Amino acid sequence: MSTREDPVTDPPTVEILDVSPALAETWLSRNPNNRNLRKAVVDGYARDMEAGRWRLNGETVKFSTTGQLYDGQHRLNAIVQSGMTVPMVVIRGLADDVMPTVDAGAKRSYSDALKLSGEENTSTLAAVARRAVMWERGMRTNTGAIRPTPLEMDDFLARHPEIRASADLAARLASRERLPASVIGLCHYLFAQIDPDAATWFFLRVADGDGLAATDPIAVLRSRVTRLRVSGGRINETEGLALTIRAWNAHRDGSTRTKLQMPKGGLTNENFPTPK
Image (cartoon, rainbow, N blue to C red; front, top):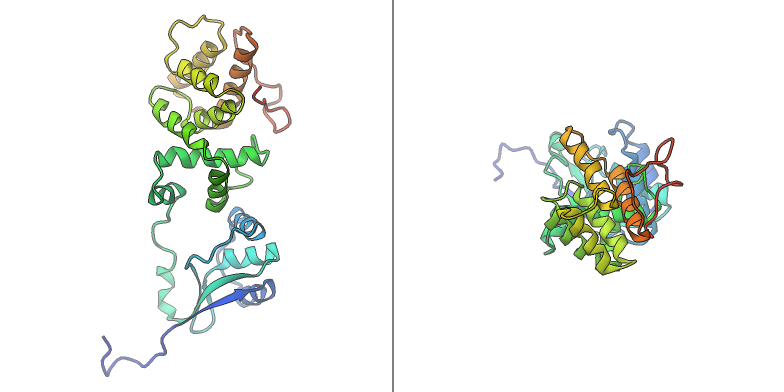
């Protein structure tokens, strides 16, 4: 509540503007001391803008009373990078002492967003959706090069609702499996496109392992993963994905194995196994 002793200040102004690349560049040029850019974030925003997925969601571009940019650097750089004009909520006239409080809240994860929208097994579904988007983009190994945005993962779920069943299976088997849930979910989704019943049977056998011959590819996969876990090793998602696909392909061929080979020189996008 104001008192007579309070300084008289104009309240901040709020408006919705169509921000063009030229305007974004102008705003950025006046603020040379912003934090370092996270390229993956800018790239993700730019992809959403280029694809027409960008939404006016209430997040703001914030300026101080002196015109300093408090919040919005990554979004403005994405506008410049994408060459797109998008609507933004712009607040001007914030006091100079509010900067430490800007963007300081707990960041909502994609798993949080899925839970709010009524999805189940949200942590697993988020992890599987992320790997599925990477797979669709042809990224098999260097999955950190492109970080899928929530809108990209939403788009994937809309186009492939069946992946929810794969995430559900992964969530149920994760406590018994020694493979990461994201690997189980993505592989089940990929294998189910070839043979849905065989895909589910395959992972149930990986989970229980009863009665498998030592040279059964499923048994070899279980043994390889178990050795890594018992020795305290962590199952790398990329390696686990490749091992599981190799075991599936050998199982489908009716082949026996004593071990699952990795390519000499390591896995690349070019030599990564493809489910058959």
